Image 1 (cartoon, rainbow, N blue to C red):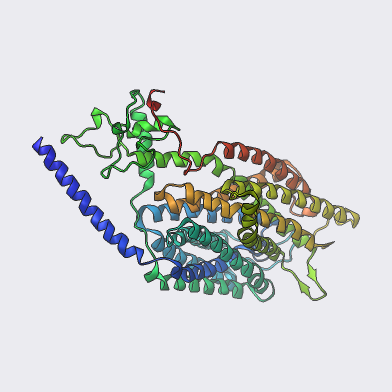
Image 2 (cartoon, rainbow, N blue to C red):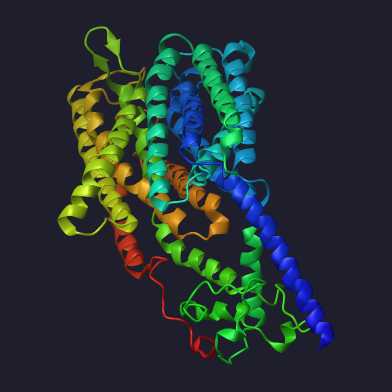
Length: 575
């Protein structure tokens, strides 16, 4: 008994010492952060996004004109590159959450991005690193050598890795500077606003330089913008609140699964004292501290048994025993996965829609007046402008008006659902416009001809679906980021914002797979889209989107927000 009291006394002293040290650290960190960090973070987002948008936005045209890649093959490469850029953020988020924190990760990947943009600049300025020039649509173009392809892919990998490691980790870093959810939500809106404004600059000014002055200068501007973004980020270091990582949260997730399986035969249900809360004894779930009722099988992982008791009579976290908080964190992830999966379709839509829109623009009349011709890749700027304007309009007018009329705030899930509907409408508009374009092609007998002939139809028709899908993004993506940041466990905040990028990445990979499958099984996507049926591809996306929206409604109906606490588990282990 005396020995046990000694151990308990040491344990309390250790806990008090740790809490005092943590309190001192929190006091120091509380003096940092706030809106003083905003110019540095948004300035860095601006520079890094201009750089990335500058090389990524015009990639299809770059591959076709500078590397003699066929049009459909170029769209596949484009979607794979964007998919990698969207999946890399999860690696950066895991590293930030588990080991180094947000700032070191963002700074490191920003430097990697700088290396990538510098290498791309060298690729277009050194003639031996790319094949000889060739007229668009010619059947006798020199294909890139294996070495040229290898260098190109290495450069794109560096640029994509740098972009992926910064894009959403810096969003989490910005949110960490604020304590109130309202301020965090305001930051996310400004983050997306800055992101889209930067992309507007990339899709207009930089693409214009690339198409009309030279690729070397265009990529060089990207490198300079990247360097400026990195410098601005580092200059604000002394103002940032840097949240100390607490080790890999994924180890805790694995421990919960293992502990629950090892205790699968435990059937006795008891009160809250039978559950393990860790050294501090916090009861974070119900009024009596017991785990929530949902996913009751996992509650076994936090149940104390005789086999968990150590020699001195105390309990400690192990692969047989987890805290209630760890169990509840794992439940949060499981609950949000179905809703998260519904967003994959939107990434698929964006990949197919964006790449096919650029191919459509290449075949249409892009003149504004007698002297100015809009670059094909610059049409995507209408989507970015629509998203930017819609975000401002939604936050400043639509949401307050909705609240005044209904006396209730629009929930993140409702905002996401509106985005789904608008996305489907955009695909309908694209299908109808492509049907009209093909009618003009046949009326002027342009089928079966090569050489990049222009269809006598204004490319400004493409603006309509671009604007519609931009409005949908203004509802969907800010709502998604806010939902994930709100619902994910504290230990996975960087991962929460990166999950948006992951679903986009998976969707872009799927868009490549769908494009490839459609190309092989139908005649809808030949290299010359005037001979194809791109309208059928859009109608196919309408059908898939409608099915996905039904799936979303089912997931949303079953989802419960974290603040709506469920009934506690009185007899959950017996079931």
